[in-house]
Length: 167
Image 1 (cartoon, rainbow, N blue to C red):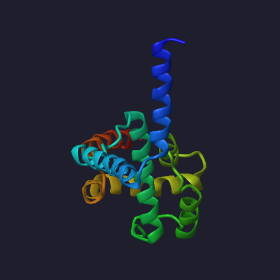
Image 2: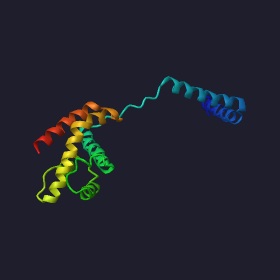
Image 3: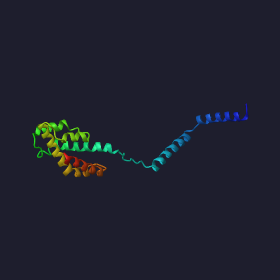
């Protein structure tokens, strides 16, 4: 047995004895030291939650959904009863059936003219209400709500108005 091995064995025995012979005061100091380090780290680094950056495809899906949601809620509350030229009960049932509009193609499907004259009348009423909301009330809706990026919404509004003009 070499001298270095015997020294290492003695140190190992001493370390084992020291761990088991810790006094409550030294273990308390270790815990306090860890707590103090955590406090220092937490006070030095402020927690900042950044807003998630969404791609424009997700935004463009969300905007028509929000527009149609607001329009259908206002129709069901009776804000646009004076703009409805067809039968009110059939129009409200049409809106209740189609109130979950998730994207722009489904919104455009409800706005475009239809072959059936009864359905075309419902589409025409919905088109007039959408046009009125987007033209007159959408800017107030954008700035009075919790929307974080109103510029993108206003650009999208102009694109929707262009689509409505072509129909």
